[in-house]
Image 1: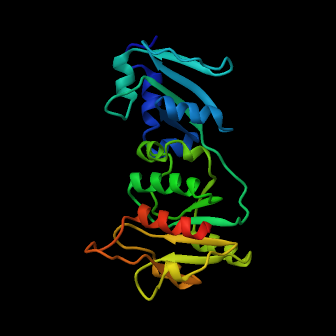
Image 2: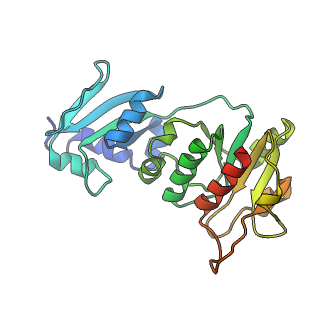
Length: 244
């Protein structure tokens, strides 16, 4: 059992809280019973379990397991009330091909928003999520928690949205962009067999370059005094409408 927070292995685990190190190692941490179980049920590679001293969990025989003191686990943990279970999981890479329903995310920076977008895209039956430049890392701890396991259910890709939009349009996909300017109420638009939705940054919205590439600008009417909807709430309304 590891009892010192100065242990070299503990330091390696803690480095996984940083995006640069996660990307270099192509691994990330998941924490808590639910997320660990979702990772195990998926086809993502699980390399190691970390259990605090008073936790009992049936670890698969082929996976390394390290027990640590409660103090050490608290030092590794990013949650206020740690459950004492975490896993080191490998980042997954998919082969991209345009699908029926795609969510494109332009520079969403709040981890809770991105996690909710991933969870909602999964719930609404979308096929893919494309994360554009400036978007928060999907392997950020707060993002992972907000997905509630949906990170393991829906493929995501990271890169230049313009290139992905080009591929989608070439495949006959209709590109919708959520914006208040020069747009049509979503209720007036019929769901398309192949469609993609662009949602934008919490403060700046969608880049003009991407708006210019859209086939349809769409908005959700505001009936009360609110200035706007949260990006993940707006996306949820539009994704369910697009699902038809």
